[in-house]
Length: 125
Picture 1 (cartoon, rainbow, N blue to C red):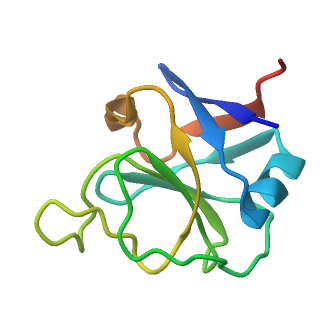
Picture 2 (picture 1 turned 180 degrees about the horizontal axis):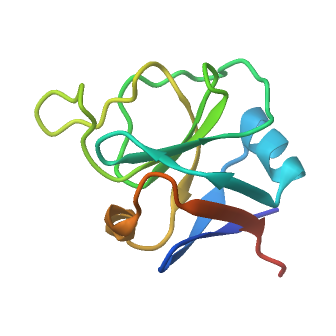
């Protein structure tokens, strides 16, 4: 089953898809989520009520990846370099589980400021 979601914050609305990982399933189960975002370079993150171990930890991610950061615990949206990136890589603060991918243009998230409200919700098929 495809796990398609809508991410809305400020003037930004994008579609994304969660993958088949166990952590993505836990996130899917708690949707919808409403939170206040923080930014860190070209990354948005916010707390979520999920406690899980990383199945496939990644220290470098791709533009548009959605991640779960267990230290938060937080949901992360990566759309460019972070303060600890080297070269053109996208490097989270520490290992994350990639739980999905933005289907639309991840550059839209450059419009989002820290403190804005964000909503993640399932797309009903």
